[in-house]
Length: 379
Image 1 (cartoon, rainbow, N blue to C red):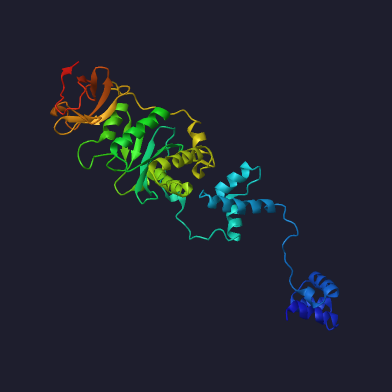
Image 2 (cartoon, rainbow, N blue to C red):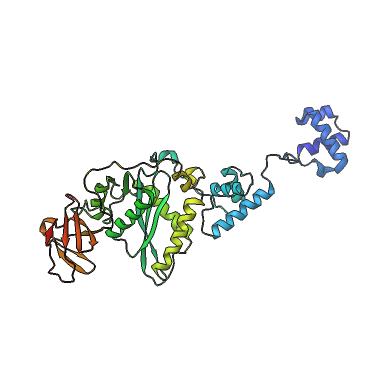
């Protein structure tokens, strides 16, 4: 039996006075009078300790908000979208509800059994983080793998603006080749303007610095005045933004890329690009969308390089070691002096015109299917 009960029963039995009981059991006289009043109203059960919780809590999260937090968590997760506390808070604000702090949202989800507590992670302050000051100051690129219904593998090539996380391009290939990297990059340049620099890993479609020579992408960038940057081998954290983006893309596409052909897989990519850039809030941008940040600041431009410029309407080709190049199943010999170089070809009314990057020299070729067609005139 608790000492409060013993004290009250001895007072009721007139064995002790209130003053004596207070001195003997170390209970204040005021509290003993309060306990006696409870005993007269409810008996011994009323002497049990009562909750100190206040009857009202004005700062408590409203029930409607708590219920909506749980609903958003379930619906966003079912759609394969990000359903973290920051994202849920953003959706609450869009609906006109007062969003609790992310820690409060996390606590609500934990109490509802929707979040499993995780071990303490490495603090963000321990990471070395960089971010470009302006849009188009640097683009990051990488490709990731997916699989179609028939079991064939495809590769998804992504270009991401470093400053705003704006998704510049998302294309599907089978597989990604060096020429496709150049074509997709030039399409993104036509749409968004050229970047001042690029950051990629050391994949063969981006660089040949470890295998000797230069590939198509490495020839293109100096022509446009764009600085090429490559991360250290075996250190993907350098390209951390685009590496982390791959996880977001695979999660939020929610299997929509599982199609029977590449052509059917392209519309889900386009839909994802629009949602990612303009609808989905981004945690690292303070809840803003990449599109709003990309358009907020003036885009930086690369330093102009005098000399050669890619001719309008020309396509890029490589010259083989014997001095031949191919175009539309036809072969043309330009000489071993251009072996291994990238050149541009453009169809004209009376032949094919070739442009060499270093000297911008145009050559005229006769059209024809024969492999014996050679350079016939230098203009």
